[in-house]
Length: 268
Image 1 (tube, rainbow, N blue to C red):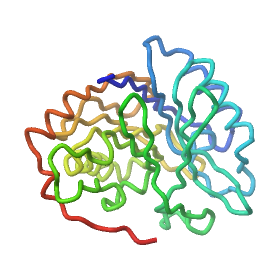
Image 2: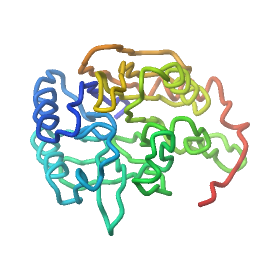
Image 3: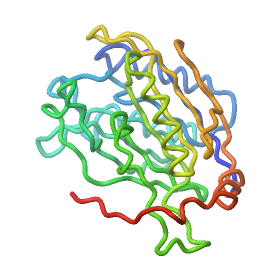
Image 4: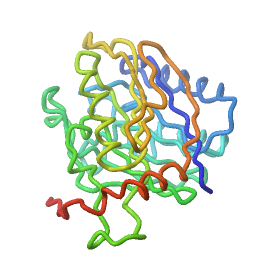
């Protein structure tokens, strides 16, 4: 129960073509040879980072969610990534955490990317999702959230009490993060790991989208001290890695910086 095996998929997405993307991603998942427990896809994995939700959105009973359910069940994995969802007349950039039994949790991206007009097409979420599997607590976030450290900040135990657990052990970002700002991506992923004393996983895409924006990927796995355990640039990749809870516990015990953290509240 002290380890967690994850698989990162860094694909070249086909612009606004759900069928092509789902077929391609299914092949990549089928190609995984190692035993894995969690498979992570990028942001808007079925369409690319599109501002056309009226044309592309689905409901939570739509094709992509049913596809996720089928794969999670057949491969006996937990499956996550974000998709465009319509609900109650609103559109969301929604991360779905799909379990093998068909149950799921959701996280609606809180920080909408105004620079690309996302805030005029989608509604923001206001609640974090911290999933649990095998004793691991996993904080799930989407792309632009990475620039806002308070949203990811560990809430320390009351009074910094020794022996009390922190909120989460692994922080995951699924993204469509352009190559032109990739320095920020790499730097902030490491910063989130160091300041929260947790593992961090960032899963990005490669290739060009329909707006001629280039993505270099650079998906990463980072340990609680900020050491890069995996990094892949400029090509598609499917990578499986086993995280060790003992390493996390060792860092937190040896360097108990979390006890000195500021208490805070996040307002709606």
